[in-house]
Image (cartoon, rainbow, N blue to C red):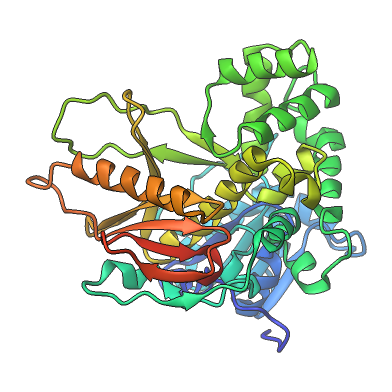
Length: 424
């Protein structure tokens, strides 16, 4: 079903590989990130369970096997609306023993009726997120993250982006519709997205009581603290102090759980390397929105607001950088972490590959000389804490910058890379 207007995505390779080895692949992610569009590139037939014009859907609710009829791979979009389809697919995969039979997509986890079986050994998962800057064409890809793991790599490139461009990219986000249509108001889509989430009561049907006002207050708090390690109790205090809204730990925890089920929030785990000292490592997760535009919209902000508030802009930019670094890392078969210890030593991001290779990244919106010097010193201080007698030395130390014009290697060996130059 390939069409000429398809923009390739970084998960294409992973999806193809898993279809070649599993009977069914479950593609998950938030709405509007491009799951269905990508899945259709690999499918030979499909059914969309949220299509109001499809008269077969009421029949499928009573006979899930009807959804399976069609050439394979068969795409079943938003399968969670009829959770019994999962078990029907699992049984058919067991029966045939063949690979590449089904692609399931879902933008939430089933809320009321769970599948009877996990699908272990039959299903493979693929997680999709909004477009990275490389996928949307907003990074020229002159610096490869993969290449930084190679010895004696030469880094060079030039980014076209200045701070105003970065503010626009944060506000627009990586939504394929916005990337393609280039709306005059880049925040139109993320604002409507949040309205839908806040007012779509079926998402919160498992809760005894749901308050849209409290959800708005929570989203604003999450946006204020985006890309930082924050505990539930701290979020509760922040909401009460900044909005006067009365809210409890249980409510915040329940609402966050729903947002996670909708794939709107991401966590970065703390990295626990072997250190030369016995320093205690902080383990609170960094939490951020799956796309920076959701944080901007939650704050009722604009591009100009970001440009006039360096602190908030810096945090929003870090969430954009973490989004891209996570997708790039996973496309290389790796994971993303961060580091922070009780003495205040931090590293914004750790790219860790499964062969044990790793690199450390400091994320900085600006590129002023003192900013780069400070970030470089922090990276080198962090690297010096690693016990390289029991684990590998870092493959690279990198400062990922918002408005730096050029990619280059400093005399101290630290790379400076504009985000508009980075690719996997």
